[in-house]
Length: 394
Image 1: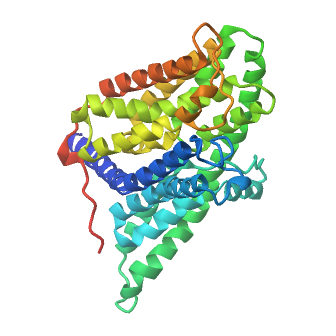
Image 2 (image 1 turned 90 degrees about the vertical axis):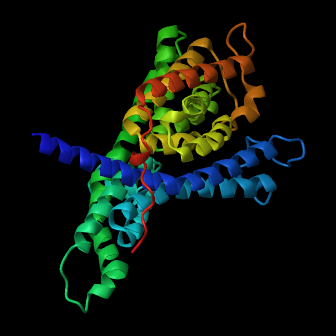
Image 3 (image 1 turned 90 degrees about the horizontal axis):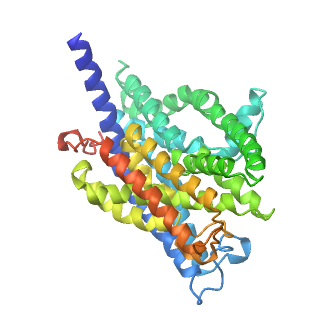
């Protein structure tokens, strides 16, 4: 039994090290994307900009400085998910696993592709906005890595060996896993997206009655969804649902998702700063950029933490954001802008005696503290030997 337990722990440690390799390669992409997007918001909020935070993503803003900065930032945050999956596969199978892990991870971020996969199975396609997020990328990276490793270990004729790492293994890995990623991993994501949207619509109509408990429950749910996958499908459902209500003059849910989306990176950065001994050295640098990203409403700043330790980090993020969301919705805080973080705080409105901007910041502070306290209590001290070094490609 002890041998069996030892084998299981060794395998679990190996998986964690593979994921940490992916995280270490992903961090620079997170940092570049987050900082440039934050610079875009900061410039758009100045009187010198010809566009505002509210319209900087619209076609009319194209060609402006804020737009160019936002394009660079958005590219970094888009490509970081495939990089995570690609380098997880790379850690397992070296060079033959890199391209399959990257491309399969990228594929399941395409909402239109997943919607078409649903149609093939005769299921509802949803709105085509679902994506598998970083959790899907971890699955894709691990599967691609192990399949590529298995293929790499096959005995083949010497004439074929030179083609194995650059042609046969990458192509065969993608061919084997393509239907799995589309119909086993991707389809449930799209279906869950449609069901969550329907459920939220029902809850919003109940919360709109003015009762405190339904409002707090909706705020907690929206807040938890924003933190669960940090830019993934669950997060996007909550965000798009709240943005859609702006046209109807309903601004409470928008404040919830913005507050709850700012809380995860700020909470993790706070924990990292206060309990430095519980994190790898490279995470301390990530905490600095996560702070900027958190204040800029870029939830993805928390992804490196969640990817490296999902079982402890994700529940802590959800708890903090759910608390912040419930508090915001119950206290009547409203936000008129769909994005912008601290740069649009002057637009916040309060439902009580506390001014809107102060109430908005107060909810963020409470959520960040809840996340920081919970994750710090849950995480053990960091053991340097558990931190994987990037492997050297063959």
